[in-house]
Length: 381
Length: 149
Image (tube, rainbow over all chains, first blue to last red; front, side, top):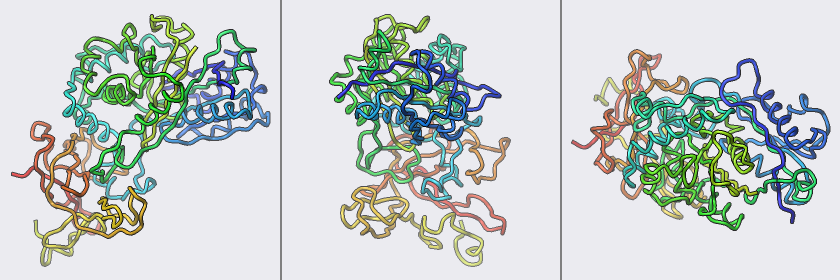
């Protein structure tokens, strides 16, 4: 079977772009990705696309061109972008196609994500009494983790400080102003122990990735990147997830653990081989826990890793080099693809002021979110 | 609070399937799987662990231990939130999971809203209280947990 390559990448800046619809941001990203590899929309044999709040992705053809290609809409919660990419991977891997695109975009209203408990099969009472908030889940997961593994509040502050600092160096990032340790540590308490500047916000943005078979890629590019693994997994019984009313006593690993293991197995490498990583940072506790859930360190070692700066751009394993969700916000349809975009930029050596210095050859992405699913990729030169 | 006599008609449970009501000793309701023994909360008609549909409603324990907690620091969006506070009157409230021995961990509002007064592993007990007053003037009853004195 053919290897699957990434030949083109494109992004519409994340954040708030008044007057530009989510669909338009998605089309912008596709056009940029096509220019990146010198192709036309009419060259695309298929597309997978998704958005949670900004329209039907297949409507992009009205703007990009009615070429008759196979366009399939993807809706998979916070892993929508990662799922579009995984679907594109399979389409090429199967041998059915040798050139196509994965695209995601979104444009969420300001403020916290809207929640409708009854649509998720949950009782109305749950929303009535003020329990249907994603922020509470993230806070209680890191609260328990801090208790069990000795993670300090300082670590949560430093993770956020790093990401805002990285975002200031990324042209596509939303928040381009670094925040000091004290600004983060004294920001309002949102959901103890998590403060305002430790959380990402819903936002806007678009991202597109053009994929090709290895054979096709070598015709198109002298330096294609290869998608060595792409996996999506959902929760098992006993995994602690958002919007859990009754939690099982028996505990299962999170879907991130499953997706990560399967992705490493697929690529035939281990966490020690990864030189740059993008890990889901819905809030700084999530990035902290995801370092261990993805196999990069043992539970509790994050305290040392963060203190020593291992995950900074100049560290041994740079994490969230474009500032992650904290600096980019989380347009759900595009967020997982942004991580892939950023790894590709780093592997091409095009990161400019945020380029990691170890001449990285292998990178990793991890997206996680509601309703308890995770998607990982491994990309190499 | 008064659950008996004339006042009873003015009390409504927030959800008729969530706990026994009216009752002199109200209990949260769950379901227990007759195939694998898993207890679920709230009650459901199949088992999320083994998929069996052979489940029986059951009453849950009124005491447990605090598994984790947070403090809700801002007024939640409405809807879905149905509390009567405004941004000006809102007071942060505690939220946690209480582990009921050999049953299930239930999510709950807590009667304590300061992190200094909460500790993972502490003993907690179930209480019932009015959450709000509905358009007919009836008190809507919900549940919460508080530290055991």
